[in-house]
Length: 43
Image (cartoon, rainbow, N blue to C red; front, side, top):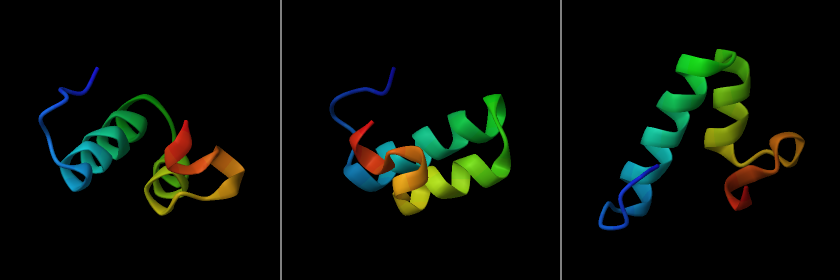
């Protein structure tokens, strides 16, 4: 979904944006922070 050439920061921002556009802002925040509740950045 996210191009390989983007930086980690850009990728995380894109993932957070996608999460916010498809789910709850609260979940997007958990994703951005890498909360264990959402599986963090390893998902």
